[in-house]
Length: 327
Image (cartoon, rainbow, N blue to C red; front, top):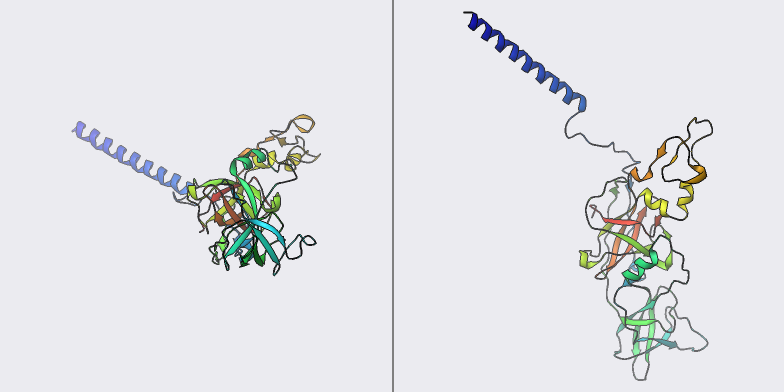
């Protein structure tokens, strides 16, 4: 009888304890929130709704490119109808093409091999990275061959992005794929790295270092990595990248805070006079931010030309790019 009573009491205590544990777990779960609760709050500040610019005909055919393969210069602009008094040619002008293989009615794109006379590096290692990426070329216009009866072919400028010059290279014209309209998107400004294809903006058109919507950039990813015309990439930047920028780095080394703060903060990587005894802020722990989006206009095996479709802030040469999920 005593054994039976003890057994009943033990079972009752075990049941109460089990119920208590279950209530404790339920309470803890309620406090933490659902397991699939979002890790952020969506507002227009971190998920702005943006409209993407659509590339025009001029955007496509005047964008330029970088190529690891040197463009042959056997065919080139030798002069024009009013040589030597005129050395720049635009829409409607007659030009003479040296070289061979021309046929009446054939169209040629005129490209220019480029050289940056300003040797300033917009980001550390730019010259070395550009040398490894390829030779930059400008696309300056299109001509149509009218007459091939002489040693130089006679052609007319049908479309010009810039003045055509003697020495500019003539290559067979190829149609480019137009980029369709893209509806507005909700842009994730602080998205962590996705693991998708990534690269870098190594150069911008006209050797610009800071670009915005509608401007052209050249990336070090191409068809060998699966890039194709019409792909969208996010332009992204870390605060560590800002620190390596020769201009932005000055702000990191400047004093921060106010005189009324008992322990004024400073950045952890700041040295010298402006380093304080207060909190040391490590900017490398800040989230990576997306500064804009670009769309691919043309590709080579190892490079691609893109246009900035929108920019939340200035896009810099040297910024990273990551294949976007918003295609």
